[in-house]
Length: 118
Image (cartoon, rainbow, N blue to C red; front, top):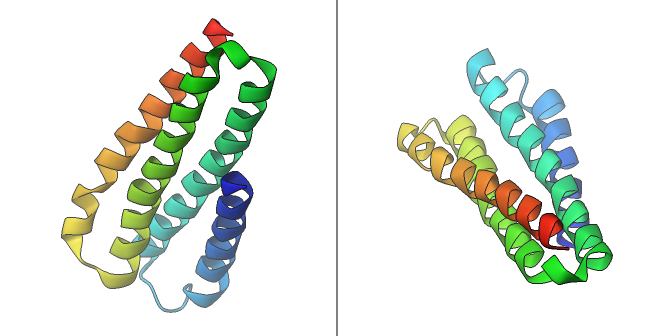
């Protein structure tokens, strides 16, 4: 469910960026916004992969669930900080982005570990 909802928000954000923000943001800030939407969509699909992995390899289901929560947290921090940076211009928001990126990376490692245990 979270994967599908996140994908919905990512597509909506991408459309909003392409159509609603194109004339309102500087090109570099529009690119920042688009990066947030792109990574949100990637990790929405990753959440769907987590659900599939949990059903396919029950031996790694606990680790897979944790990877999913890391994807959720990482998306909120990574994409959320990029959206906020682009829309507000508040530069310190960019300091949050690497924390979200680290959560996303850890999510991928944990998902790989979960699959290997399954």
